[in-house]
Length: 181
Image (cartoon, rainbow, N blue to C red):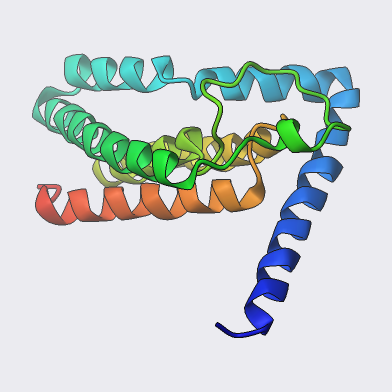
C-alpha cells in the first residue's frame, strides 16, 4: 500500500465535506431552499414513472419502445444501485457534519451512490437518444438533480459523481443492447 494513497483519500473526503458545507449555505435563501426541495422531490421517481407512461401513450411505436427501454434500464440500474449502496454503507453528510441544514427527508440512511442522480442521468441519455429535443429539458434537470442533492446535505459530490458514472454506464449499455431504431 502506497503511503500517498491515504493522503489522496483524505483530500477527497475533505473536498467532499467542504463542498457540502459550502453549497448547503444556499439553503439560507428561501428561493434556493424551495427550488432545491422541488427538484429533489421531482427526482423521487414519480416524474420518471409519469414520463414512461406519457411516452408509452403519446408517441406511437417510438414512445412505447422508449418507455420499455426506460423501464428495463431502471430495473437494471436499481440492481446496481442497491448493490453499491449496501456495499459502500457510507452515511449521509448531515450525519457527520452537524453544521448542515437538513431540509429534505432522506429515502434511506446511506449516501453512496446518489440514486436520484443515477436515474436522472440514465433517463436523460435514453430519452434524448429517442427524442433529441427533450435533451434541452432533461439534461439540465439531471445536472440540477445532482447539485441539489449536495445542497440539501443528502450526498457528497463523490456520491453524485458515482451516480453519474453508474447512470451513464447503465444508459450506454442499454443503448448497445437495445439500439434506437
